[in-house]
Every structure is written in C-alpha cells, then in structure tokens.
Image (cartoon, rainbow, N blue to C red; front, side, top):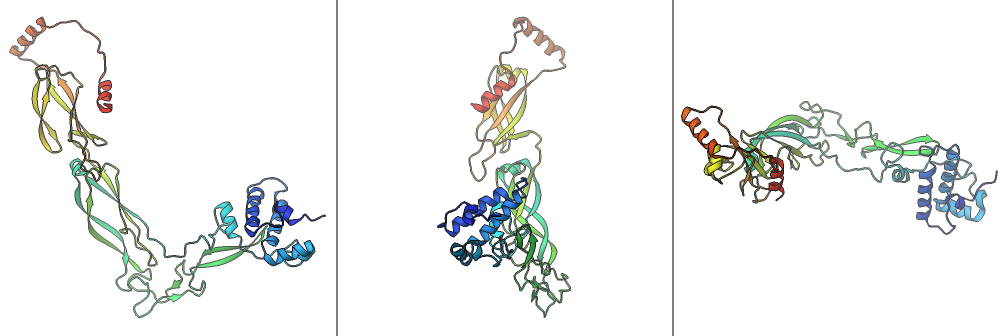
Length: 375
C-alpha cells in the first residue's frame, strides 16, 4: 500500500513551524480519536496522524524524512516500523482536559504544598443582631500541628526521610501501552502520598500524622446588615495543610432567628399594626416598635385597611454602609366583636347618618403594596 506523505496527512506545508505541526496534530487528534469518533476507520486514521506527528515533531527525524522520505525513518521507531515512548500529556491535556490519560501532566500538576481544607460553622443570631452587628464567641474543632513533633509526624529525635520511591518529588511517572503506543502518566507517589518524605519512626502523640484534633474558642465580628444565609469568610482559619502549605478558610454561615413583630425584605422591615376604627376614621398618633426602640407614628384621618406608611431610615443598613432601608408599617383595622350598650347605641346612631350603599373596591391591597415598593 502506498504510504501517504506525512505533511499531507497533517495538512501542512513543508515549511510549517514546530508550532504549526503541533497545532495541526491537536486539531486532527480531536477529530479522529477513537474515543470521540465512532467511525470504523477512525482508529486507522488516528494511527496515521500519530505516526506523522512522531516524525515531523522530531527535528532529526523530520530532517531525515525531508531528505530520504519514508525510507529515511524506517526502523528508527518513528514510522510504521514501531512506536517509541513519547510524553503526549501536554497535547492530550489540551484536547481532553487531562494529562497522560488519567493523570495530570507535569506541566499542569501543582508541585507546591497542598492547601488545607475549608471549614463551615453555623451561627444563629437574633433579628436585631443582624441589623446592628454583633460579636460572637464560637468553638471551632479542627486539626492543629502536633505539640510533640511540631507537625513533622516523626518521633522526637528523628526526622522524616526523603521518599526513595519518588526521589522526594511526591509523584512518579508510569508508562502505559495504548493503541497510540507507550503513554507516560504522572501520578501521586503511592508510598509518601505526595509529601516527598516518609516517617520511619512515628510520633507517639499523633501516630505520625503531624496533627492532633483540638477545640478552641474564637471571637468573630458579624457586621451590621447580614441576612439569613450570609457567608462570612475568615481567611486561613480552616484546616491546616498536611505538608506545611497554607491553611484553608473558615466560613461562618449566618442563621437569623425570626422576630415576634418584624419581617424583612432586603433592607426594608415590615410591621403589621392594628388600630381601631376610631383611630382610622379620626386619625391618631400612636407608638410603634422599631429596631431602634419605640417611635411615634402619625395616622391620617380616613386611613383605609392595608395602607402602608413608610418610616424612612428605620430599616436594615446595607452591608459595610451606614445607609439604612425603611420600616414599612402595614395598617390593619380591628373591628370589635363585642359591644356594650353604650357602644352599640353610638354605632347605631352613626349607622343612621352614614351612607349604606356598598361599592366594589377599585384597587386591592397588593396593588397598593406594589405602588409603595416600586414608588
């Protein structure tokens, strides 16, 4: 069978740069790789693409191919005569999002110390504490460096030794035979678990872990304006790193307890206020509760049920700001269920003078509520 020109296989010119060769291979490999292409001839095409790339990506083999064609690379583990062990992890990491078919590539693998895990702690606070902020003392249970070995995990008088299996790198390279040939995979060292060191004489206090479980108390500041479900991040207050890296973070999850009178919507506070029919008809000045204490509220004559009166600046402050929302007082008119003789006589006289005609209401309560909130 006639062998195709390698430049033709990759769809590039003979003057193509090394970057052009790699880019062409990446695009074709993405298209014809058997894991993503179900065509019957996909594997054969991919092997042809792979063979062309192995030759044209190698400076010496490419030079021999340019001078002598396929004969110049036969038997050199570069053409159809065989496969060589090449690390394709960078290329396949770009194509499939991982390196070395299951491991991380040496280019993308983090070799630095591992970061500690994050912790969560739930704190319940009163409605007023959410409005004005509060200091709380909490108890956090987490791992701490062992006081005996100071975090090394080794018995006092000894020290961890460099892992001989990985040479202290914390990772090892494995070679797998696939349809592409020998693929190099970088994995965490199974002996030292990525630490690069092994403990031969474990510390009796922590059993070689380097950490012990402790509970400590801590004061936290909860800012004014937090709401139910607010998360506060305390950097570096989470679990310590297992190998002297940065600690994780501590997230405080806020739970705001319900209030007897108040309800909250964003920065506004709602209060249902009951007044009697005389106050609604004649008008009045009444005391109402606010988060700042009692305050006087003016009821205009002829106030209707469902009317909303806005008390500006009596709401919840915006986080890290002194600007506060409003308190919205929703008026409810109470109708007496029982009347004494004098009260009944007065209402009967009032009924004789008032118009008894019944008319449908033009706007509902929710329409008025929307107009107040939207403005």
